[in-house]
Length: 141
Image (tube, rainbow, N blue to C red; front, side, top):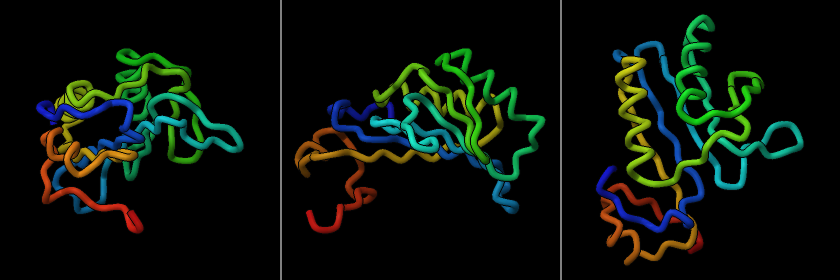
């Protein structure tokens, strides 16, 4: 991930799914950022958001604090999602990779990163260094 060189303006959203091993009980933390904001009721919230599954509520303050220390933002909760409204937005491969590694180390997880781009040509995807076997085409394009 750190070696990818893509046009950051074309990255629509990213997700880092941090899975605890063994994943028998589907224990994970998912961090994501949507360039155009994450829906919160009838408004879009800009900044990093995370969701959690089978994570004890007692761990949430440490996850939120860990992210706020690095990216700031005002904490807002909705269901199993925690929004860091106004937090620093990151889109570079190096920043996303560094966040994934720090989450792995801090919370003893294994990170899986997903990226979604808008209007990147096949040539741009290849030049970015993205693995062709993992590229999913958008139907109708």
